[in-house]
Each structure stands twice: as C-alpha cells, then as structure tokens.
Image 1: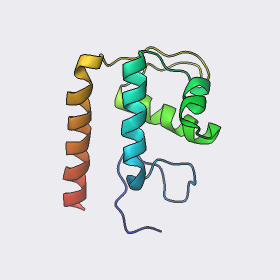
Image 2: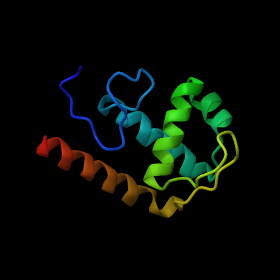
Image 3: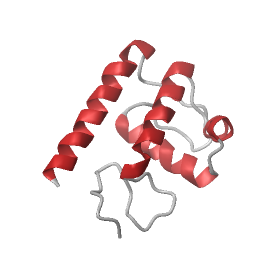
Length: 105
C-alpha cells in the first residue's frame, strides 16, 4: 500500500482503476475537458483521452460526487453542472481541499 494519503473522493488503494492522489492531474484535466466542451458521455471521454472503460467509469463517479456532472444512466449523455466561467475557481477550490488534506495527514 502507498504511503500517499487517500482522499474521500479516491477509491481504495487496491483498485487498479481508482483515481489516486498521483492522478489528480488527470482528474483536473478531465474536469477541464468536460466543462469546456459543455457535454459529457463516457464513450466520448474514453476516446478523447484514450482511457480504459474502467478508468472512465471511475472518473464518472468522481465527476458526479464533485458536482461536475449530473447523475444519470452509465453511458448516457450527462448535463454539465459547472459553467466555463466557474472552472478556474472550481479547480482552485479542489486543489485547496487536497492540499489541506495532505497537510492534515
């Protein structure tokens, strides 16, 4: 098991397709792509970023939990809940939360 702290939105360390601390840059990039495009679907995201279906499924859960996309059927198009003008502030807040949790660990 890694000595890196786990965050509430990251899965257990034994899940090979989980979003781990070292992959927060990927999560941030996915958030940017989704918000800037104004649309989300798992197949489109998988193709755009060349990610496995399992990784995109995990990212979908993360995006739902963070309030980036609406809940819905797994492969359905989802509404994006963050406006592009809010993107910078949203990502800044997420990074701040992560830093706070790192320092608390």
